[in-house]
Amino acid sequence: MSADALLELRGVDVAYQRRGHAPVRAVLGASLAVRAGEIVGLVGESGCGKSTLGRAAVGLVAPTSGEVRFSGEVVAPIGRRARPVGVRRLQMVFQDPYASLNPRRKVGEQIADAVRLGSGAGVRADVALARVPELLERVGLSAQIAHRFPHEFSGGQCQRIAIARVLASDPRCIVADEPISALDASAQAQVANLLAAVAQQSGLGLLFISHDLSVVRKIAHRTAVMYLGQIVEVGPTDAVWSEPSHPYTRALVAAIPRPGAGSHLPTELPGDVPDPARPPSGCRFHPRCPVVMDRCRTDDPPVVEVAPGWESLCLRSVARDGP
View (cartoon, rainbow, N blue to C red):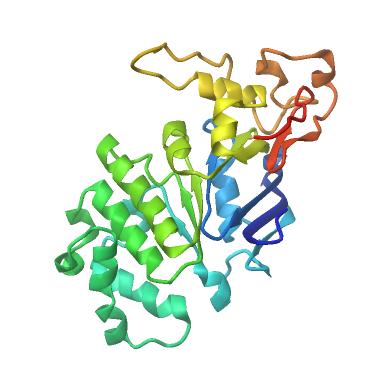
């Protein structure tokens, strides 16, 4: 992992215990780093463990093993006690903006709460409220809406309000968990561009979790691909999408519709993601892999350095001269 990582996940496992059943290993040995000023996209099919890994990154889910560090400090699971001030600069944007906002409180009050609690310095209520207009305008909203309630806004506007509340704590890193999936097409583009602009202007790190591969390709510097709890490929976005090394990544890219000249219908990846409580032996992707070998059914795939900063979890991956 990089020595200059802002957010670093090292060999993170997350297992859910079920009474009378085998544990479900939703995340298995995931390692990932996000640097200051960098946007890292995390993609994969539904049920692959993306959101679980994102929640583990901010302490909402306790890792079964492995470690999460932010600015060199261990991110402990959230409990009853207040978080250390330094860790409060690691924030999360949730998928459903309506569920992440308190419907009974005005949006300005909720943003002001984040100003007060994020600093840990005992900011007065009036000083916190004075910052609300600036934060709303930063996300493209009018300062006049501070006295309204969440139900009075569209999904895209509510997500902007949620982002304003995150920015109120002066974050150094944001984990955005499917922040555009609940929005319509125009709002998706606006919110994705807003998050990318905030990361670029503020120099903060952004882990952008999404199943919309076209959006990730547009905004992310690096892309990590996840399958059945494992990160199977990670590298520079342009390289990963133009010449993917892992068969699963190739299948995801082939499933993207391409209009215009040279257009074609998306290629369907056969089968479904297996039950994480009963994962296949050997390579977890082998039951759906179009280039499977006998060894894939029994041997755990190694991590292969395809090129500097580009890794693939596959027996067929080979080193290249560069991305």
